[in-house]
Length: 569
Ligand SMILES: *[C@@H]1O[C@H](CO)[C@@H](O)[C@H](O)[C@H]1NC(C)=O
Ligand SMILES: *[C@@H]1O[C@H](CO)[C@@H](O)[C@H](O)[C@H]1NC(C)=O
Ligand SMILES: *[C@@H]1O[C@H](CO)[C@@H](O)[C@H](O)[C@H]1NC(C)=O
Image 1: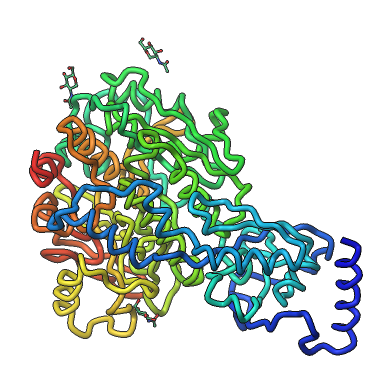
Image 2 (image 1 turned 135 degrees about the horizontal axis):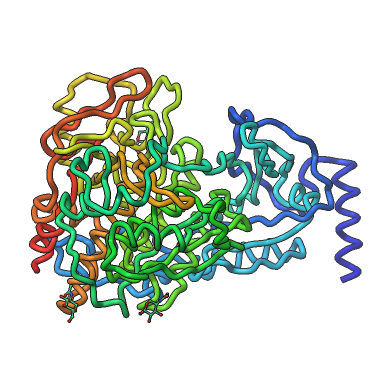
């Protein structure tokens, strides 16, 4: 021990005397870097060298391509393996680092008196805590305090870091390091709260579902069954909650009493992660969280719904998006959700490609074990999560990940595309095979329109759509209508959770990773094609909804009865 500290002192002296590659120090190689501080962030000082930071190391997986092939095989209705979801252990065999990778990285950390702990079920994600001075030394980095100007939120990042050249292939990335991800928006996906309504007015079904889309409207629009789902033991719809958005029980009860009285005191269970809570003070109810539980408990009648509140104690760069997947993957069969719905997202460019790909691989793992993963496509049309000024179209994340089902928005009676519906093409993920024909047809239909504004070789989104304007919710003791693909996502998730209930009743596997099924001949026949409207943004009219798939409403809106036919029930 003493010897080590003496030699480290000696090394420090040597470093000071002759900067280049002293004996005993490994040859370092820049692993990730950026030239400038991204727009929206500013330097905010130098942290104390003794301050502890927690860093994560994503190790190279044993065979991620193998898992991808297997996941597609079990999710493609045309494949004999369809429905044979993997076990978490089978997934872990693909995802875990090789023994060589793990020992090479562990050895290097040991040379630096560091011991990492594994924080993912497969062991591909390690975590270390160390003083900033030591992190700077370990990674040839310069950790500095930065501030996200709009929110004032501070974070410690570096513009560049290195790893030993001999470990370049073993390490995907260290984080948080070069990623500058803006915090999730306080009212994600909601563009407006349009009106406040008295409870007594809501006791009957309104004449026009175009101006108030209540549960009766949605049930009629999508043929959602009103008989209770019965297979609560193995079916579980999980709503992801972030950024201290709390789902209020009293508001939910108010919603059900007025709009689905036959559901009585139906409610949701609570799980928490990363210090998340679910404060029940009425004035602290979150619009997004209430919307999510109203649409799931209120539409997926009889399916157990869990609100999973992810707190601020996450170290994953992305508000807990990585943590939640590892948390769910570690859950036992029967507890792990069959459907996960998330109405939060980012603009794709705000995540470095390395992180976006890593998160996407996490969703692939969930899909492989039988969880259908839904995300809102964004509320800024072709302009991204929210409408902003832009010169090129802004794809959103994680909608660009082929392993999530991205949900766009519709409005009106009959339904047409909602102008807010996020849609377009990823710059990080290429067009997957399941939609290659659809994307090619759509792009040939628009010719050179918008050429250069979007990535013609990227994964197109959304995959499907549902009502995203004037959706009625209860919030803060009253009734409101809200807009956003945040509405469409839990509505869609509920419909698929009810399909899973029928599959379980018939002794069949649940749907799992959905997209290859959705785009199959049987799957696409279960959608009502939306052929009017567009998603303006970036000073353009945006893409137009057309016959067939389009980057506004995807394949169209789901029909429960047609979905039963599509799954062979
Ligand atoms: C669930 O069970 C009840 C009572 O047996 C029955 O009335 C109802 O139709 C069932 N629901 C479904 C979806 O099968
Ligand atoms: C809901 O009502 C039923 C029947 O009255 C009761 O058994 C159950 O405990 C209630 N659940 C909650 C969460 O209040
Ligand atoms: C377009 O998408 C492809 C496929 O994902 C990607 O390789 C390429 O870098 C993207 N182009 C731009 C300009 O981002």
